[in-house]
Image 1 (cartoon, rainbow, N blue to C red):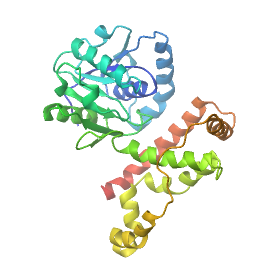
Image 2: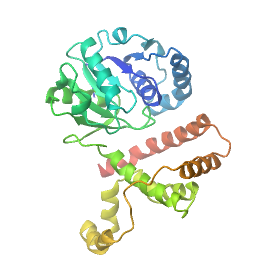
Image 3: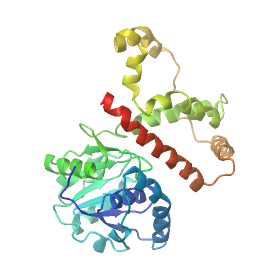
Image 4: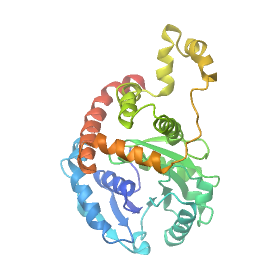
Length: 314
């Protein structure tokens, strides 16, 4: 989908910020990357070089023009004349409020400010921002340059005009926006992921399984289904001929059984050591970069294959 937005600033060049930059470059956007740490520039370009083969194949691009990217250590310079700002700072209310307040003062009033927050409330994040009607949450998923989902969460003062513009912009970079009706902590996917994560921590903490056992339980089970259909359609099929109605009649009573704990266990030194030791063993001496390459190759094949099937379901 076409968008009038072409000049973009990405504030912060960590894992998420870098992912945004790569995706935007792949769609011919002019991107200014901001980071106070000049050493991040070399790290950023190294990751761009690593990910380009996957991105070019996914988006069917013969070439991606990295000359459309500039790196700045001045916030004022990075915001000059941009139409869209993707903020990617650490998950901290105090830090984000101050940063977004500065962004609001230094950017033109028509520029959309989107925070990549994973769960903070936009009304608080944008509470000190000039023209908060242009502030939204644009929560992506790692790796941003490959996964198409982005949760769009409005604040209490966000205008429909800016929501629509943000939605169109994300579509223009081949994303599938998920519109959250109103703000809530954790948004959608992270609330679901956190519930699973909490239960996984309890199982490890109480010695029922290893980290590898639990990963296999997802990888070889529900994870395969989830790559095509979500929780509700999966359970709809579990009801057989009569679908969700029968599933609820059959398995609904099990919801009352005390299977889950929901509240997270304390991250004790023992639990932390168990998690680190377990994932280190799973890595089998492979670096994070090497495992990332394996993941990206898999996601590339999966996303290209999924297009064939998702048209039949959506």
